[in-house]
Length: 280
Length: 330
Image (cartoon, rainbow over all chains, first blue to last red; front, side, top):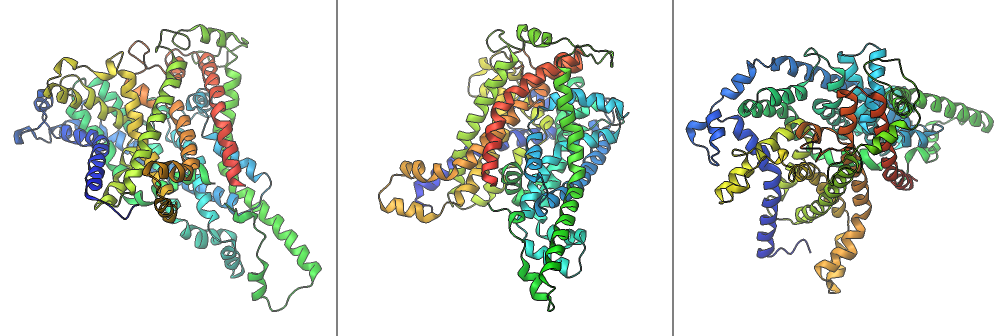
């Protein structure tokens, strides 16, 4: 049924595809367009811009904005998101290896605990979590935020990596052990190279969880020294009322790293996400 | 799906390498020791992840449930006493939480948002998955950009949709004016009737691609000769869809529905960052209610009680999910 494609069917397919992708892409394109327009051009409410409407001033203004320096927020976001990626990758790789290749007692129970832990309402965890953060003096620190984000990403990363590692034949690992690999070097040399797509998706997932989080940062961070980009964008949307050019520019800046990383992992993303949610 | 760890260890591979076989008894002893050693190492590997999750998820959840029965406040930490079911009585008497004006209470809004958004995502996602199967030129480009809307940070998504709904110079209102419907000009996130649809649209915009790609991947796994055989038997497009495609994608679709129900129901930032629950509580959902009670009113115990109500509602969805996944595991 797929091979025989008549002309009307082809035209129909394209029409529907353009409707769908118009819906998905127009908000993104409109945002980018607004970020390059002068304030007057934005307020004029014209659908089609003229050449004189284009400017880079929104980007210049936001870089020197009085509402706080975007550089600090970008730096905080980058440090936190990269640390979260590293921590989640190491911890979840070890856990996934243990749960995939070792027949430990209570293995199934542990997997169910992992799966269930993603379903608790974030806001219910937030209340006692905040007390925990205060008790350990982690309020307004990178460590507190990194800890929170790593936990958000972990269960999913463990499940996803476990399903990739399940596909590595046991015989391959045994053979490497016979050849003199230690247990950890078997993981590094045999299991990890075959699970690379899984690792890429896990890293990407951990990064975007941290990069986009508002809830936990808003509670843990109490000053600009630890606040991240989402807080900044929300803050300027409240304080720079109607400076929509600058808000759009800030939003484009927060999206760029995510889009670049997405382009890199795109072809493995869905399989990885899906196995993180179900396969196990 | 068979789990490699459940397979018997493969003695052949190792045996081939060893010319001198040890006797049966030492060999049995060695394998017992080896298994125990391996188990122990498995725990070591899993420990950091489980400890972190235990400390930062399970402990807070239990603490949260206990807090729900106290009058704890973030203003004077450490001073709290047990108040029994009082928080829950107050909750269910609060019209912003339950039983308020139609469309103005958190429980009803949460359920409404979750049900409508996930239903639309399933329908639109299935439609897009069917489209993506058509091998028209350039289809690969469409397939590869699909997930772009999924990865964009929530705060960016909210700003993007702000630029769509803004009065006079938001794209939607510009288009309405240009087609002569200027009298409909309004700020969607600020409108009593349109704020909830606007939030549903944001959810649909984000999640439909994931539905589409997951279902599309599953459809690719259905053998083509099933369709060919049905065509030869004269089955219509609809009956092939009904009898081959739907049974083929049912499991994946069900899992997708369940995880999206959980994600949507638990979601906090879509609403908080766009409408804050307003106007007049018309988009107040349970996570935002909990956050506002905790972070703006400082009533931690009361907020935790509302969280407990969420937890109970979630269990209704989570238990079938776990049973399904367990079944698939074994």
